[in-house]
Amino acid sequence: MPKILVVDDEPNIRQLVTDVLTVEGYEVESVADGYAALAAIDACRPDCVVLDVMMPGIDGHEVLQRIRAAEHGPELPVVMLTAAADDAQQWQAWTEGVDYFLAKPFEADELLRYLNYLFEGVPA
Image 1 (cartoon, helix red, strand yellow):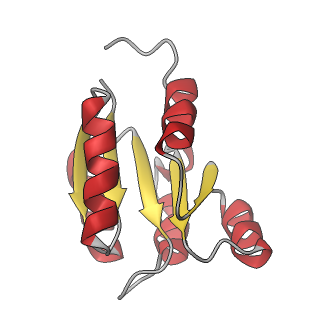
Image 2: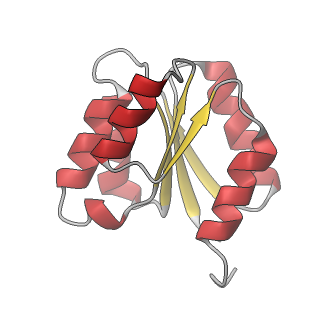
Image 3: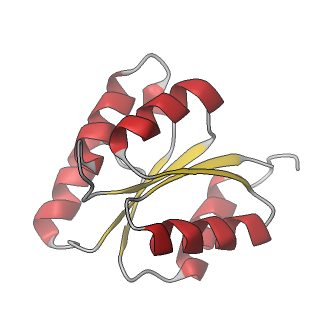
């Protein structure tokens, strides 16, 4: 199954997303901030990143920019989750190259539908 990296500074959200994805059979790693996310991407080479926007240190927008600037970064699917889901946040995320955008509180089914679409035909 595909490996998903979950990045969120809120432990409850991080655990919720991890639990939902694990039940669906995904291999999941989770981290609490942007610096840890960048290190984990280098170390575990995930197939997708579920990324919070508002985090201490470097925020999700900075993480996304660094992912896209990396050698294989343009091909790595990134889903952004944010409580600040106004038009400006969404526009910034789309212009930075996000693949999918979900507003908190989010529906787990919507995230799963996107991941199922993303990994359709990928052998388990």
